[in-house]
Image 1 (cartoon, helix red, strand yellow):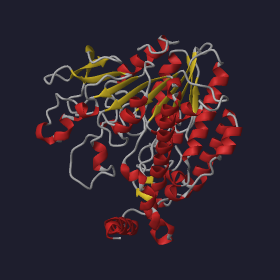
Image 2: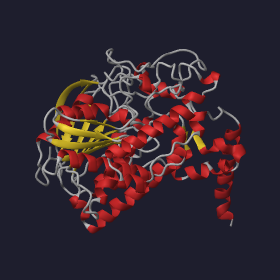
Image 3: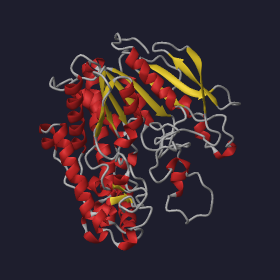
Image 4: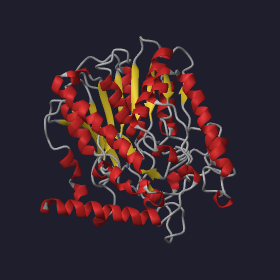
Length: 483
């Protein structure tokens, strides 16, 4: 009984803090309280791509009617993506990248690729990869995951099984349109990486599901923080109407046209449930030997990531792979950065902790400074089954003011019009979030100070495309070969 006392005290403390938070802070707005009517898992499984797009169009029309057309006067402000007079209102752009889309090559497809975005994100985050695959002759299919791209309130009721159903639908569409005799790639970013893996493992026991020939994962969500496990507990006070705000982990202005800033408890809970199901399935496949049937996996991951658990990626997934030519690419911190004592001591030894010298069944590549005296980076490659490494200069550089990559940055080149450090001037989304490294006093901007620290574009993006191109050029790869 006494042993349980600290746990009870901890739970009561959490509930007390959540109740206090629900009575203070920003109010819930229409985009927090409106929940669009998405297709169910059964409906997604029995519809086709065109049917999904029709249902999606109805959802966006409902958002316009229930949110945009109902905005109170004090919410018709430039920083609100739901105000049609705002420069960041998505429907005024030439393409609303919140919606599902396809990109087709000029001739017959040489392959098919399904690209899966992350949690709170939208299909915009897969845009540059989709364009590149199209230019390489692939048909690219990019689904909007249910509860995304519309209003953050949609995440309060979604279940991760709906995202997996949308993944199955997109793969069906890609396979049917491109045909059975071309390679099929799955590209997943963050939560989309978990979905790509889960779908692939599901093909082991369901012969009706087309099997991918290559997985490309960007900051994949194989594991999440410990807090996500208890996210449901954090939202308990919301069962009482007076404490409804307890169902939200953050309530922020929605100034990003293609990503939610506000985040409900259920979003964290569903990501946790997905990763737990994924980890159980990986473990089962490893014990049965079926894990040998996984296609090659090429993963890109920053060694520092505040969103996903990197140890889960390395130990739960890569640590159990057989020698099939898979590769893990890690982006080290900028060891030439002049941040001195401002860097945590743990950051210095993080890479050695994550990847101690050992024989592995996969190829590992570390993108790191050529020396502590230069921002130029090189790829240090260790082949599967070897302790020796080779280094190749990439002729790419860490920006002078950057100490690491981030979870947000990997899918976006520096020329990205929204997130890029040097945005493309030919396209304008009303705001350049990649250039918000401003200085001034507190309590002036609507942007949370922490968001100004996280880099939002990737100076090494050309290297990602180069490595993806190698997976295309090497198809069909022999089992155990390396790129």
